[in-house]
Length: 140
Image (cartoon, rainbow, N blue to C red; front, top):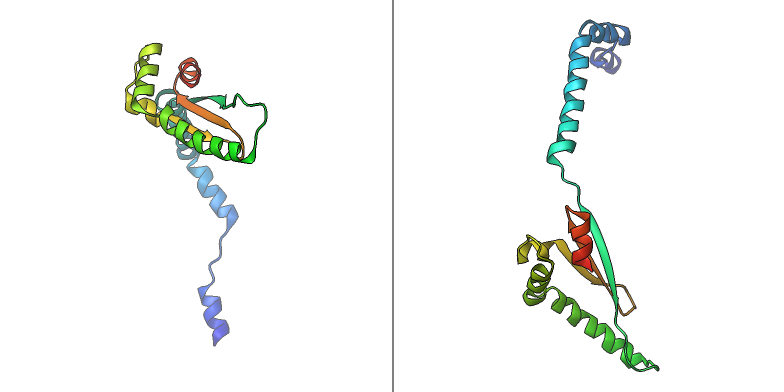
C-alpha cells in the first residue's frame, strides 16, 4: 500500500517539454534579461553614489626617550581621550571652517571614524565622502 502512495505522489518533469515551452516564449526571456540589465545599469549610473575613504594616522609620542610600562598605559588612556576630543563639536566645526567644506557638524561626525590600533600609541582617523579629495583633506 505504501508503494502505491509513493508512486501516486511522484511528479515527472520532462526537460525537453520545458525547453520547448521556454523556446516558444523566447521573447519574454530576452525582454526580461534586457529590463534587468538596464535597471541595474541605471541604478549604478544614477542612484548609487561612490564612497571614498581616506585614512590618516597620528602617532602619540612622549618627549622622554625611555618608556616604561606605566607610560604605555597612560598613553593608551590618553588615546581614548584624544579620540573623544577629535570628534568634538569645536574641533569638527573648526575643520569645516578651515577647509570651507559644505558639510554640517552632524554629517562630518557621522562620516568620521576614529580608532586606536591595538597595543600601540597610534590613532587612526578614517573619513568617508563622495569626493576623494575632500575625504583626504578632512582626514589629514
